[in-house]
Image 1 (tube, rainbow, N blue to C red):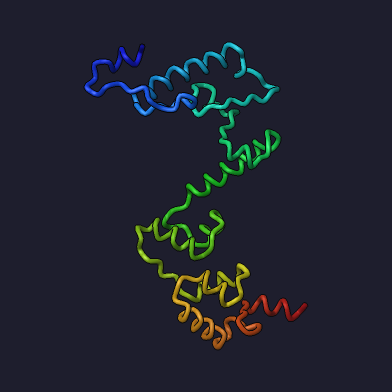
Image 2: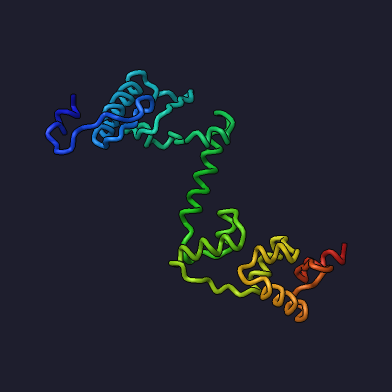
Length: 209
């Protein structure tokens, strides 16, 4: 009735088509009215029963609606089903939410000025993937990270085989292999055995053991 009152004279006819079970309507006007109604009803229900005043109980409200003075309270934890599945239930849900929120906060801090190592740490990705992320941040401008620096970073991360290095380092395979040979010849890294390399400090530690 409210939808008809507000939008009945619009040039575009009102459509009530949508998924009735999930209450998702194709017409944005109908959807907005539904949300306003649902928010009011849920907020009144929570207030009347006193769910927002309980201090010794955990209340789970399954809804994607923003409820004033309920979902925006500091003690309210917002989660989705993925959080719930990762937590395996309510016992570790708060910890899972905190971990996810920390990750989201760290990810939001990444900028064009972030280092490749920082992007790798936050996103848990490879050097090559981190370079691509930074390229997007920097408007697609190619990153000029020297092969030497990339190789050192990859070796420090434990990627010491030629195939691993070629995969981790941004550059042509031939150029990467030539740089590996140059670094060995320059005594900056060591060739442990065929196709396997290490930082000099790592090799010294192994020799002492």
